[in-house]
Amino acid sequence: MDNKVEHFFNGVLRDLTVDTEEAEELSEYFSSLNPPPDKLVWLRATVFRLACGYLSDDQDRNVALLKTINAMVHSLEKTCMSPKDPDGNSEFDADKAEDFFKSLFSDLKTDQEENEDIFTFFKRNIPPAASLVTMRATAFKVAADLLTDDNESNVALFRCVNVVVHAFENVCLVPKDYELRLQPDFDLDVSLSDAVQQMWDLDLNRLRPGSDYVLNVQGGKQPYMKEDTAHDPLFSSVRSEALNRPTYKLFQALLDNYKAETGSTETISSQERGEKMAFLKAIMQTAPMQLCHKYLLAKGAEDVPKDPSDFVDLMYKVWFELYRRDSSNDSSGFEHVFVGEVKDNKVSGLHNWIQIYLEEKKGNLDYRGYVKPKSESGAETNSDDHVLTLQFRWHGIEKFVGTSFIGVSPEFEFAVYTTCFLLGSEENDISLKTGTDEFKLNIRCYKIAHDKIGTAFPEANAHFD
Image (cartoon, rainbow, N blue to C red; front, side):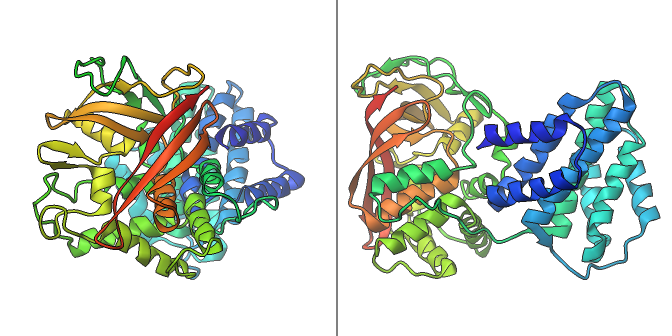
């Protein structure tokens, strides 16, 4: 999707104008795109990023470019967002807004303190719904007067305007409720493997290898080999902006809520419960999770409620409610699968690439090479593989074999594992085409404490180019 969106945006930006017909086409495009709320920040930021490539030393062209950006942002907001407070809390004061934006843009940068000032300004000056467009357009109007023939200064100005629009949208607007639109030719009465493939195809938040992150897989080995075949980290880099996407941020907030050792009683504070519910509600506003819910209902999965809010409660139960692994309330499905545990001086669980990256970055995890996959076509493991079987040491403790999806969004993993757990068996054969490779996977899901997830992870049985 990302490449197609960028191609469309470039076509709009290239001619430096948006007439009435093009404005209608933009609205139709965003409507047909039907982006989930988590994708809106990326869409708007992408407009600004691509626009920087069309700046020139012609000031009139640069002003036209800025007007084009404004039109594109307006269309995105009109199609995909609604006023958070239709009545606002103050009348729109054009002079006040212009003075604030002029002061903000004057040094062509926004630090943390200024960013907080922007949010504060909008919170204190939310205009009625009828004036929201004027409020945002005023920022563009002020910026247009500051454009020069200096490319570096103009790029910095565009970044400042993007920061302002980001704050404006966060304070004054709210994403419209997302409803997955299945393609007319997609039948929910398909196999589990086909449903997982569709979840993959719908994962708009998946990161792009070589762009959003860079892997260094290094040496391969057999599971029994103990030597270190990777002297460098697995992740050479991950774009911080990518990890700041809403569901990614909410997911990361959950990772520090647990003790690694089994046998240590876990407690859930009201704040932590709130973080978990916020995450679950956010991923329910994404396509993979909505497909998960629709598919489970279509297949008649036992005890799966029709109401999405009740389904969130069910997910909380199977993923986050505590159970006994060694002692009372010392574990949960989420902790085991995504955070990792240590039991009997062995690492168990920890199948999530974000946690692996963050722990590697902190110095807690030492990547020691990949386990060579079974392959019927001689496929090589490389940096664009979305499934890897790894060896690593976590806090000095060895994990000889652990398979993880790489680069996928949190909602994709939750969708796949939840579907397999509630509908499938303990072992689920899946064929997955990732765009660069094809994998024959066994999604293993094991139950514990009668109705909760004990573990869930992919096992790579074959790998094809």
